[in-house]
Amino acid sequence: QEALTELELVPALAKLSYYSIPYKNEYGGVTYVEGPSIKAAMALARRWGNGANSARITEDQDERVIVEGVFLDYQTGMLTRRSVSVSKVVWNRKAGRYLPLRPDRLNLAIQAGMSKAVRNAILASLPASLVTAYFNKAKGMASVDSGKSKTARNGAYRLCLTIPILSVLLTRKTNPELERTHIKEMRREQGDL
Image (cartoon, rainbow, N blue to C red; front, side):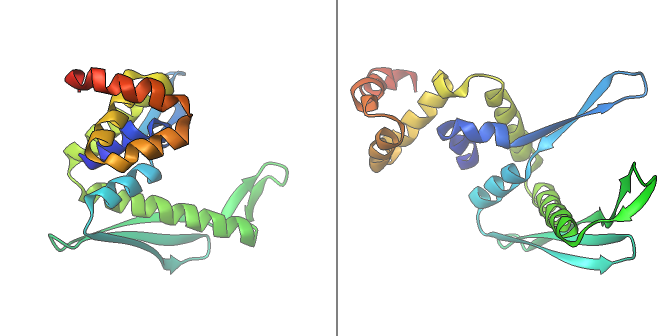
C-alpha cells in the first residue's frame, strides 16, 4: 500500500515505473510488450521491506555473459534467482558481421543486464496482486497530466495529514503560493479524502 501512496505523492515516478516497447508483429501491425520497470521493482522492494537484492556474473562465455539477479525475503526466507543473457557482440551493418562490443559498451550492457535480472527476481518474489496494482496505477497516472490531477493532489494531502512536517516540505518543494491555496483547500476537501 505504501508503494501505491508513494506514486500518488510523486506522480512523475509513474512514467518511470513501467516500460512499453513496440514490436512489429507477423500481421504488419505493432504489438506492445509492457511491464513494471526496474525503478518500479526497486520501489516495490524498498516499500516491501525486510529483504535484500543483488546481482552477479555467473558465466563468462565466448559470445555472452550470463548474469543473475537475486532477491531474498528475510521474513519468509524465500530466495528467488533470475538469469539474463548479455551478448558480447553486436551486428555491424557496415561490416556485415557481428563485432565484439567495446569494453565500455560491454560494461554498460552487463550493468543493464544485471538490473533487469534483479528486477525479474524482485517481481517474481512479490505478490502478483501488488505488482499488478502498482503497474496499473503507474500506467494510468502516466496517461494523464499528473501534475495537476486531483488524484495526485489528494495523495499528497493524505500524506500531509499523517506526517505533519510533510506539508512544510511540500510547500517548499512546489511554490510559495501552495500554503495559501492548496493546503487551505485541503482542509475543505478532507471530507473527499
